[in-house]
Length: 543
Ligand SMILES: Cc1cc2nc3c(=O)[nH]c(=O)nc-3n(C[C@H](O)[C@H](O)[C@H](O)COP(=O)(O)OP(=O)(O)OC[C@H]3O[C@@H](n4cnc5c(N)ncnc54)[C@H](O)[C@@H]3O)c2cc1C
Ligand code: SF4
Ligand code: SF4
Image 1: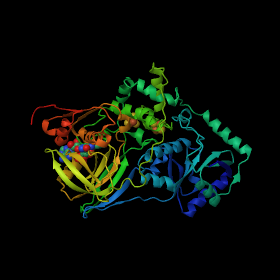
Image 2: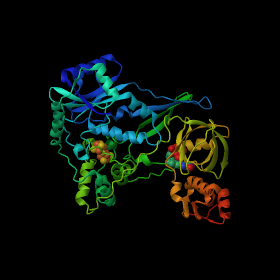
Image 3: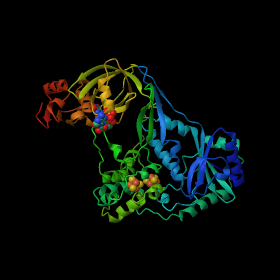
């Protein structure tokens, strides 16, 4: 919509806020002082508002992704009973700075990408954002260098202090209706519009932290310096506290866990904030930690912000709020300092390519946390650890997967774990997964019998882009359980309807021990096909 600007006197704005609080239709949240710092908290009066703050300790993401939230309640007494537990009431957040508004827009891209997170979505829909242009700049902020010091989008209303009044830019119909119902405003004059520009320009001079390079160049700078000594030097003093990710408005990772009541009759599935600086973040079932060294985790955090997410979504996942710089005791978390140091050291002159990916198609809307009920139809034990499960969705609708995708399997009371889909795509509610017993969920799963109920979420993940394989000789290499998704794609390309799209097929399949070579029926079949070469190898020749 075309942006309309109104003005409201500061006195009338206080009345507006107090009316909203009194009305009780919304939880009215605003920026308040807490000691020498500022926080977002529920307002009991407009007097508590501090719209000239510099930065809040935590960003407003806590209202959209709470630090702790219950996703599901389930029963352990019935074959299958699970209910989502979305609880949310209408809310207005007053005083959100432009960089935090932009961070929320970035988070939208992630939570609405492919599978929409209905918990997050509901909160976004239920919340009105009344932003405020920055008046005082925090010591560590470099928002001006990130072009996040102002914004034209992402708010319902945006306030700019223009003296005795605020200019109010209307950003949405919801914002317009709110003003109409609760506030006394006037149309902004051309002098008021000039005052907005003057106010914004005046703040630019207050930034002490500045980037030496443009943000489009972060990615190539990071890639050129992947092996730089700086990662190790900084990691040596890192305390692995993950404060940097917790305070960050653009970090959105979480962990999911299951709690069962003492009487073992019901339980909850909850999610809590998690962060890539924590060692357990990449710990997997076999006990392996993918980013075991602090250096790897420390470097990953910057690559995620400056290289991986730009490649996926087209934006740098840092809005320059400076919170991580303030929160980090050894002062090594600030991207402005790190990138400036690298830019200083780097001999790489190539500005690199800053590519913007096209909008992803949203594959599924609505519920994503509630699993679909499914029945185990058959279990084949390959060896003492690995078993093949044939599963049927109880709604009898096809799974609708692509080769390479995975499903999350719920065994209520034990948890949820991801498994590759091992069958090729097809118009059927039946599919197979292979499970290796390593811990709680996998051991329980392998103790179940045909006829038992489990929960399925998915298909998830991107899957293989089989179109890009067309006209080519295909080489598939996989080891151990890596054969699970590989079997899906191999049998897909071997399907007579697909086969002539591809040239020869070579399959290299390895395992630690001969008995860990699974899917022998498939292997025997592949070996008999004249234009398929299938080779097996093992680490040790024990039985
Ligand atoms: C995308 C994706 C696809 C996957 N596909 C497959 C697949 O197709 N097939 C497959 O088998 N796996 C697959 N995995 C791995 C699988 O998801 C994990 O093995 C599973 O999540 C482990 O869950 P768990 O609850 O059984 O283990 P957890 O209980 O979480 O175990 C975690 C750790 O604790 C240790 N542990 C647990 N209990 C004990 C105990 N009593 N004593 C000592 N140590 C213990 C385990 O050894 C492990 O190191 C996939 C993973 C991903 C991310
Ligand atoms: S970089 Fe700083 S804030 Fe982040 S984990 Fe290390 S010590 Fe903690
Ligand atoms: S990385 Fe640091 S400066 Fe950038 S958005 Fe996150 S907390 Fe703010």
